[in-house]
Amino acid sequence: MTSQPDQQIPATPGLEQLLRPVVRESSVSEVAKRLLDHLSAGDIRPGTRLPAERQLAEALGVARSSVRGALSALDVLGIIEIRPGSGSYVREGTSEFLPRAINWGLMLGQPRTQDLVEVRTHMEAISARLAAERATPEGIARLTEHLAHMREAGDDRRAFIDADIAFHLEAARIAGNSVLSDILYSIRALLQVWMERVSDIEGTISGTLCEHDSVLRAIAEGDPDRAERAMAEHMTMASERLRAAMATPAAEAGEPGAG
Image (cartoon, rainbow, N blue to C red; front, side, top):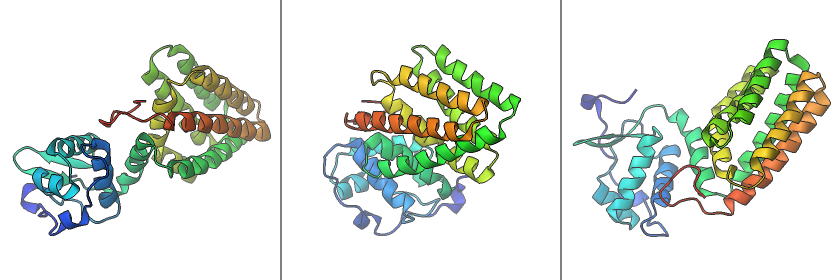
């Protein structure tokens, strides 16, 4: 819940001095990343009013249009709230910054994305192993349904991505470990942006379907070793596709899935 007008925290004095000029002028994504870095680092408290566009533009050495675009993108992500006639304010709930930061990291192709992918790979493999040990007929039926939705998506990229995410989250749910499930759920933004970036690469759809089918069959047959191996193989292939996607620059305007 955002701060009410009578509880607004004024713009942080000297915040402009924290901001260094961005390397590439008129880069919306670079401006958004710079602001996000300070937000997630705790330099700016929730409820704080950000400096005016003109001040931010001068501090970052970019055009006001770049600042305006970056603020709009952060508003869409729910990180800040733009109040017409009042200014831009940091939303409450700083714990939500992590999945959004992962989202931007993937979109911008940052090297640290590979570290996040590595962690997720091991978690997904453990999830698949536990799912094979604990799966119920109802759980297997739900997994089968998600895979069917992936096949039926056709050229509907959004439907395919949603079904893919649902498959992974369902496997974590079947695993029956609440901590593991919560962690995977918290990085759902990573799952979504991952697929948005790679879905245009040739062979992604067919390869992903085949890999998910192998995971499903191993879980359904109650084979933990094979389920873990199948998921690990899937994640390895997905990582290769991600690296290929990251080699193609994302759209400058911060459009998810561009590239």
